[in-house]
Length: 281
Image (cartoon, rainbow, N blue to C red):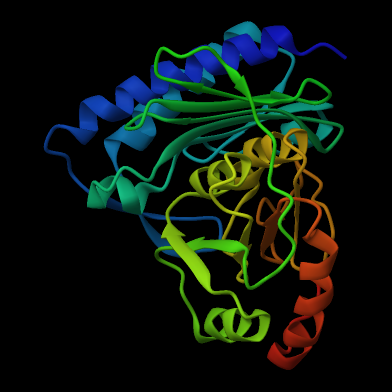
């Protein structure tokens, strides 16, 4: 199936939304609080809402028959009846936006029958865009350079692998995992899309997130980009996600790897998860 039109629209929207984010980023802005889908308070800004509105309004014009699940829009159960659903995070990494460290991204994904088939992730501060469609490979556009195809690493030795972890979600359990695997090289970055971007650029080999804090719009676009570059993204039990579900959350964490190391990571995580008392939700 050809998704070229969907990719073209998503790329255009990601860049336009990125420009909106940068207008706010380089100006004074107010930080507000909102209640998320887990009934937790988290930060939000006008930048999140403005970028969200730009993306959602254009997608409704271009693809009126598709469902939409966007972080800053009211959810509707009508999307559950749709075969095609767009999953939008207008700014993945709001904490990083507020900290002005550049680690945030616009993420636009399309799920077909519950599977991620189109993904665009754009980091506006660095002007780096990743894009992919099922069967079409993963590509990176940097500045004015021509698009280049992405392929993940082939590293499988934990002592030589580079782990990328979240800046703001560190836990004693994660420290335990790092010690058990013997990881020697670790980076701390924000945004799921940013971290997966490091894997597809061979700057890292895996990303682990042990808690249920992410949502479908966090992983939809990064998943297809990683898959098309040769990697894999599952929950910590090795199960792939179905998108456009009623719950919206990813309840079992994230394991994103270069693919060749994935089974090894899942196998070695299993006894640690039992030690932590973790069971699939």
